[in-house]
Image (cartoon, rainbow, N blue to C red; front, side):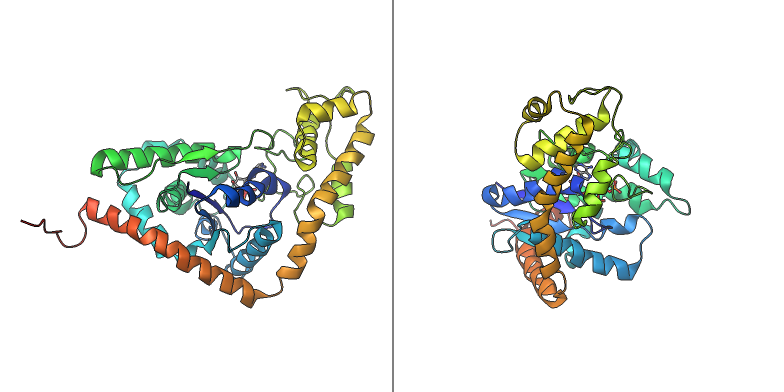
Length: 333
Ligand code: AQP
């Protein structure tokens, strides 16, 4: 089974990225044949970006993925911009992508509202490039957080429309969204997802955050009226902390509710903070060791791109041929 997922090299990665996506990538190494992970720097230019910061952020993200447990010998790990095959397929797939579908994408609606100077066409086209990333590898399964569900549906529609029009060439992928922790919420605004691009970072726990900062942020997390530690739609703050606790402890949310029944919010938050500190500690420490050696990181990316190219080229050749590009293939008489 082929597994593929992409992660943007934007800003500092947070607990939501870790729980929703990165921990699934690590699991995928056991199941994927192969598991393919891409640092999607071409996606990062769909909002204003600083070229120097982008280059550094690719290394930050790679070091973090390695620190979290990705092993380049057990997965294919590469930088999207090293592979022009992605952008070529994006253009080819534009022929079978419905403009109307793109206008309905929630991410475009939200992110375009936040742009002050320019809403780029790239931001609108983001899901087509994402579909190309996935379909280029004949991917079966895509591990993502809940926020990517709609983009995945679009990628499936694009593959189905392509196959109906040009023949069964592309694999129609399915998403893999975790049952718990698919959408970690901002600690200060538990009705919005924890995100790289929120203006305040007070409710965002970064993966490489110092333990005391983590403790401070969890202590200050917005909670809800009442005293009970249970999940419920009128308790988004406590529900979020219960989910976080369940994932970092590797138990069910119901186990967390049982353990903390009758105890106060302050005690619960302290326990959550300590659990998160311990959960992230090994990743943070390993990240500090790996991040400085940019030459080694660059070598990892180059090796990964070579392996990715071997997988991508035959698929792109099939797509090109089916769409009528290149010389005619003569049938033997
Ligand atoms: N809050 C979250 N909870 C669970 N999963 C999440 N993901 C993102 N936020 C949460 C998942 O992380 C993966 C990588 O996402 P990305 O490449 O979009 O990286 P990002 O831009 O840093 O993610 P953000 O924070 O979501 O930024 P914004 O809000 O600016 O787009 C994906 O699988 C995603 O589902």
